[in-house]
Amino acid sequence: MVSATLQQRNMTRATAGAFVLVVCAVLAVHGFPVIGWKVTAAIAALALLYLGVGIHGARGTARIDLMSVFWWAALVVIAGAALVFFKFKGFPL
Image (cartoon, rainbow, N blue to C red; front, side):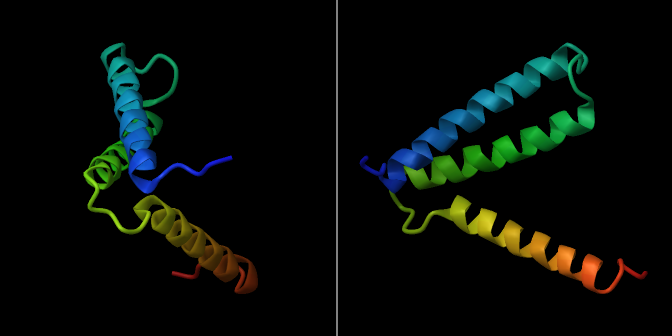
């Protein structure tokens, strides 16, 4: 199996992001009949991130995979939060 180039992956991300944004807009127009507005807004924000990163990377200027960096950073933050929560018995404020 041949791995897609970074530019092709970014084009796919931009296309998927645009599609999901349109779906979220249709849900908003119809008054959020399936899921609430907060979940729709979160999904739309992630789709906007995919669209933006995809457009930037599809221009051929990207040297690293920004979405891969984003997901690794999210994993580190989640692991750190889980460590604090389970090791130190919660988040004292």
